[in-house]
Length: 281
Image 1 (tube, helix red, strand yellow):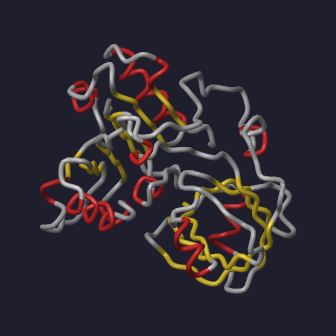
Image 2 (image 1 turned 180 degrees about the vertical axis):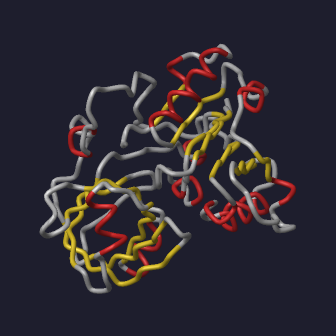
């Protein structure tokens, strides 16, 4: 049986590449009808008296044992606040699946970062590189990437949680479901990968749809985006129309956003076991 999944939160490049997590600075909500199964964190509370670091937050998650060396071979500004890193991987045995993250080790920086790949496993196979999209923050790894990282900087990586998907070829009646993405940012410049998303919508009509939200837009919105843009935050009214027993909800963003959207869903009758979110920040 196909199910619908809804993603909410900040940016989600994984989804675009059959994967899912990026920078906690935009909000993204995805509604998904079961077309894949994942190891994710289910509901729970995100409140704590102090901020936990990446390794503490993910202490119970599976990790590969191997730490691989990598060299920065490309740096691109995706927006005023987000940089895309292109990393050449030295270890030929380094692999990952869509939806995984890496522990990010920086020489001279004691805090370990955690960032999701925004490139596909296919790029690694073809060119031996992966890409990360990192939003600026005072968190030491993110700050280092934005202020000190240069071409040929060397880091080390270790792959984290594995996401497994069903395959239609299994002959078990599985069929591709649908994905509805609610993606919120300050303005259209901060809507990363919007062209990729529009391309997926065009390539998979009826299977993937996206509703962009902007909260502080001060310039005209381009004609291509206008049909898909709403000014204002993601609201309960936006989400209620997708509530059903077959819908899974994936939320990505900072803790206040996750708590707010989760509560909207619970108030609309969504079961806690159907709400998934990341616990990074």
